[in-house]
Amino acid sequence: MRNQNSNSIFYNIDWITVLTYLVLVLMGWMNIYSAVYNEEHHIITDISQKYGKQMIWIATALVLALIILIIDENFYTIFAYFIFGIFLLANILVPFLGREVKGSRSWFRFGDFGIQPAEFMKFATNLALAKFLSNQNIKIADYKNTIISLLFLGIPLLIIAKLQDETGLAIVFVAFIFTLYREGLSVNYLLLGFLAIVLFILALLINNMYLFIIIASLCTIALLFIKRNAKNLFIIAAIGLVACSMVKGTSYVYEHMEAHQKTRIDVLLGRGTVNLKKEGYNVNQAKIAIGSGGFLGKGYLQGTQTKYDFVPEQDTDFIFCTVGEEWGFLGSSAVIILQLFLIIRIVFMSERQRSPFSRIYGYGVSSVLFFHLTVNIGMTIGLAPVIGIPFPFFSYGGSSLWSFTILLFIFIKLDSKRLQILR
Image 1 (cartoon, rainbow, N blue to C red):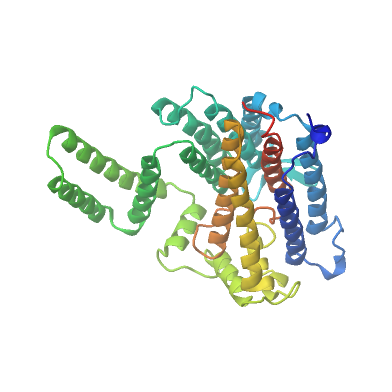
Image 2 (cartoon, one colour; image 1 turned 90 degrees about the vertical axis):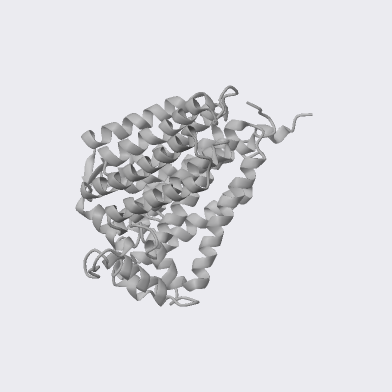
């Protein structure tokens, strides 16, 4: 017998996930208020201030969440490619029709408000990837399907990085590799990616000639432990050639980077002397702010580094500094645990899906959130380059909050119908 409440938009909703989302958004709003607190405009609903504008973004995000729950779940599978195409077109057009903000032409402006289409490309890509991989005839282990899957990630990555000069938002698409791995992508791809990162770092730290000698030596040693036939010799030679090419390519790419991009890499790797008043200022002040919070923090609205604007972008990319200074180690840990709880919850929900589309999409959501969380915290404490990506549900801005909300609530909608559908 059909449950009479099954037609309700709230039927079978995972309220634990919804509640976690609401708590994170509320905590984010309170931290934005603290980060840009103004004694002359201390009312949190004052829309002339960032915290007042964030209130509007939160209200509209909740409306978007409600609309997503109202829309039939089949809409997201049927129009997945169409949605991907629309947002891909928007990202192509924004450098020509948008306005420049902080040196990047990646925003559509509407009065005092701006929309950054690159943020929305994440959920659009997730839909398209889930649609492609959920096809019964698709096996990610097949070389052709692997290439097509990587194109779904690579095309928006290149458009956002090259046309919009938004390297941070572009790199986020790498997170979907975890989704591909869950669906059967060979671990060899992950190992190759890891080795490529290691080679990239070594190429910047060690003289290329020395590195070529090390690679040649390792290849020679490998020949001593394998059966020496034409096939194995070819494989070893190919690996050595590719490794040397990557080293040379890294040097070429680095030399042709923008000055600010070189600076960020140099600061991270400790190359040369870092000027703490210039290129090392952001990270140094972030460390001071977080470290000064101690175990329990200085108290809400009591952060001196925050109050006197020592930390740049402290309401957006460096919002975690406000958490660390005012809430201390205990409060910071609570925020991180809550974020991780949401991500683990999404993974758990993904595994219980009957629909391949829903499962793949869910893993995409968790991958994006995990990437944002780790990289944002990493860059505030000097373990990752400052690439400018928001802290999930905390950073000021409508585009990021809307994109995270849409990304999450589409999955909540799909999960609510897991007992009724099997695509």
